[in-house]
Image 1: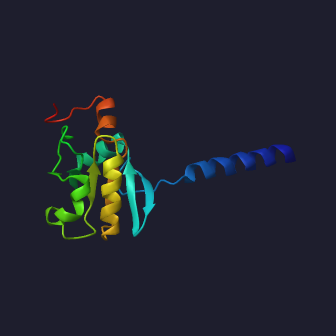
Image 2: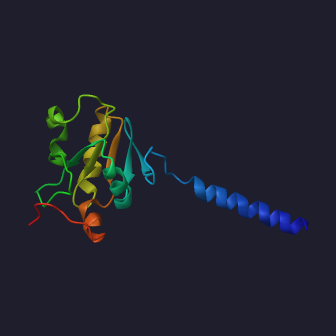
Length: 146
């Protein structure tokens, strides 16, 4: 009996630890994201399904930072080159707590742009992990792609 209780306890501890992970709730049903720590704060990586959930009741500025242009995910608000984000702050919300979601083709350029925005004091920055390649791989359309 003691052995059974011991193994039950160990299994419960393992399951609880596995549920902890590095994901953090974001206030959107079904969307959790993964926090990424950078100088000045954090930004949140999200998956395609998480972005789809967020787009249902879109409450963010949606920015394509890929260069050269290769298409937009539907509902994109802006295109700003990833390496010129700091020079184009006039296109972004003045409120540094406003939610901003970035993407590029694969996630590399939007990771760089996310880091730049966090370093500039933005506190609600989100990044589509895998970029629009992940979006297309999920069978979802792009607008204006060649």
